[in-house]
Image 1 (cartoon, rainbow, N blue to C red):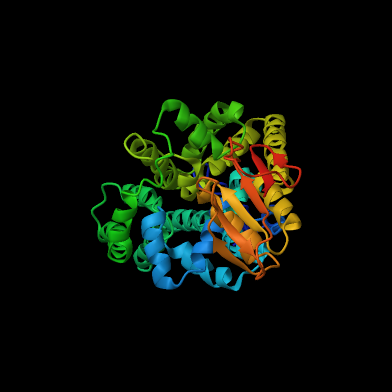
Image 2 (image 1 turned 135 degrees about the vertical axis):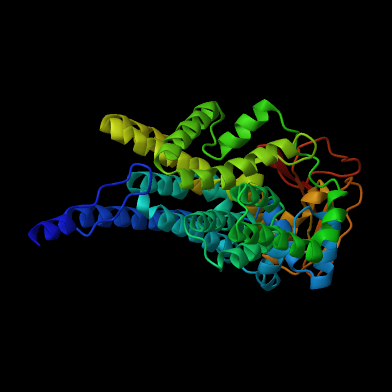
Length: 476
């Protein structure tokens, strides 16, 4: 009897090929509480970073495009996206009430922060079993410049951060112990994802690969769920997608090359191009460490992150696909691999692990701070305009396709009534008339490219303002 009691009380060994096991002994409880506390603190820090100065900058072009499109009636919005955009409608529909209310920048971006923090919290919960590897991976996700940028932008990419982590967690759970609810949840997730961004096709390919060559009932239900999600998307948006595909809206994206793959994949880890090869080497080494420790989790990494990246690169040889944003659903993968690399180094040498952690922090923290505190050129230009213009002025932008930024910041969020107006003699410029009074004869032109202007018969009425490639000129 005594021997039996001693056996029960003895700490359970940690399986080298699986996640860290939690024991009921006091010492392991301390370790478990330490990991949990570190993950909670990391999630809180990540949430604070995503909220910090969220409303400090004016909406950039893509955000303003979302905002101005969202102010349209529903039918007009769907028709507009069909002919003027390359994205599905779900993000636009979610933000439409905020756009119509003309809320401030903080509130308009807040749904993105909610999704991004949700992805971070879910990832931390998923990684709680992996001790140091889980803490490092979660910290990288919290500080990642890529995740911060897209988790604070009023576009669909924060939703994709959450969808990518949800899919990975679901895949991991299904591999370890299939449940009847897994397939319906997967089908719904694929449908919602495809209505958010077509990059979920890449994720769907990886989810099909996850089932491998299995022929059991659960594997067929898993495949059927992916197909059902795609079928639902085709029914709801397929015809509009075909129209968008012929619109040439993404033709600015270059085709896949080896150099482009290196820098696109490297951008998911760091925004410093000179470190991209080092980052990819670290990701590869971390993947090897993970494979040796937990092959099921490694399989999830391959199918839900590596396979989508490979499909994007392959598709990019024939279509405009390969940019870093197209891999948002897979961006958690490289960071998780690096977390396992640091944990693998820690098993060999604490000094090596400490050096690697300091190196990661020295790269991640400055990039995160820069993303939070440095104003963008559009923000500076739009702030200058809104502080300068007066009732009776015409405010115009060149080229005219940059009009959404002007319409939102100077029009919707401005303090004067406004209406669209023709701008003669300035090429393809588009403008707003401010106030309900007669025009006073001033035209404030926001020129984004600082190219030669057709200034015949016009004279300058204020000192030009310029930052980077943009300038503001007052003309009569």
